[in-house]
Length: 186
Image (cartoon, rainbow, N blue to C red; front, side):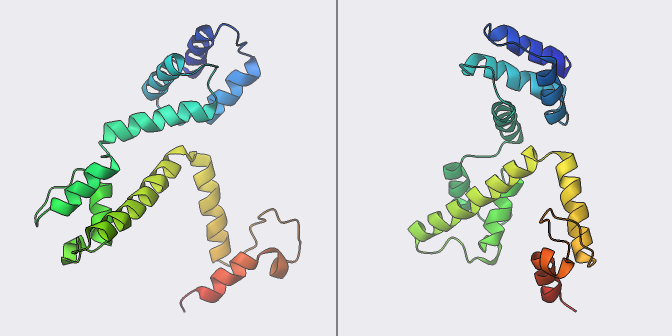
């Protein structure tokens, strides 16, 4: 089922919504990187859950929920319990849980400590940030990732990547690039 067909199915679920060619074009472009089976599943969830025709954001929230479920990312409490009780040669439930536990010193026997409340808070903060980064990576379209990589490479090489400041003098227009150059290890 192609994106226009999935949108037609959604539109039929919301009788007061009129699906236009512009809407189909915009949604098709913004959802182009989502596999059709995931998009259909997310649309079906939206059809049952939403009061109004879903925005791209609402559809993406369902796609992300499905991906996290498929990947087996545990809830915060379950992830913390796993780290707090894990012993050497542990098989981690998810790479993100392992990553956070190692960042907090689990592999060096520095985590957990005797202060469970502080450990739980540190783990929760790190886990939430890592999960948010993973979700942001999921919702960022490939074209946007490519643009960021290209502009960052231009900054790194000392070029002025036209970041949209409207200032033509690169010494003024690119203070972040200058800061990055000054911080570069030589």
